[in-house]
Image 1 (cartoon, rainbow, N blue to C red):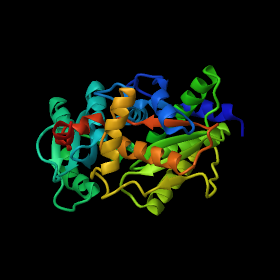
Image 2: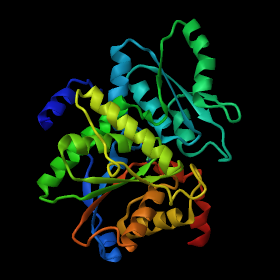
Image 3: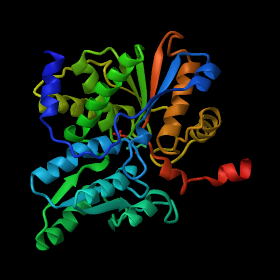
Image 4: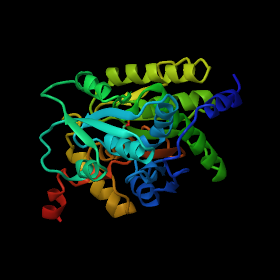
Length: 337
Ligand SMILES: *Cc1c(COP(=O)(O)O)cnc(C)c1O
């Protein structure tokens, strides 16, 4: 299996241009010095553009192209009330002349700020799920209405995390390997927040297909490790199928740590909030309370526990999410100083 084979296959998938690429790869000089561990870089997918950035932009390039090519005119997707995925999806759909319906789970998070505010500015049609209702059940409920209006709904799974969306993160690995070559640096690890798993699945597949020894460590922000590993493995294998390659994963290929998720999805941890403040004050970079704060706290803890050699280079993937800072817990910094 030659790596050019999969690159040719990947190039056959049309993408609508949505993301500002390549995203920067930057040094975290202050953090590297402070932790006295491996060399730490940051891949700035928070700077991907598309209505304030984040990792969903790369996935949506493939998903929106598919919807358009197959004649769909209405995008339906779902997520939490502060979903970054939903915010970037409404932006991507609108830019491409598609109607977009967002199915959101109501939550204890009060107010109309953050991603919800952005969804509304972007003109999303918002439907709330009933208590405990899965998004899929609500999609089925609203589908007859959409069809009755003569529209064709295209459902994007939450997080854009099917194999097609994950191609965006195969592409990101290609981009990262090129950037590493340019700066003449061998990278050993990527640390990334992991939610619905498509980002990690794409990266795992991308590393396999490139024959790269780069190891991805996913930090679960809510799911149990076993659930995440199963989902990610199956999507990574489907990515192989899409690209006409066979991807065989071993037990070391998909690593997810679930010790940093605290109270679960959408519930910030003390460590994550402290980390947001530390990285802001060290590096001038803003993380978020739901994903990247937890993931960066995990990275710091892994360094402390000796997971990496001093000679290693670790890339932290900044997946975005900063709009969620505003509805969640900012009072902490205002009152604590
Ligand atoms: C969606 C999201 C993730 C997780 O990506 P998955 O592909 O769902 O695992 C990480 N960080 C941010 C900010 C996100 O919005």
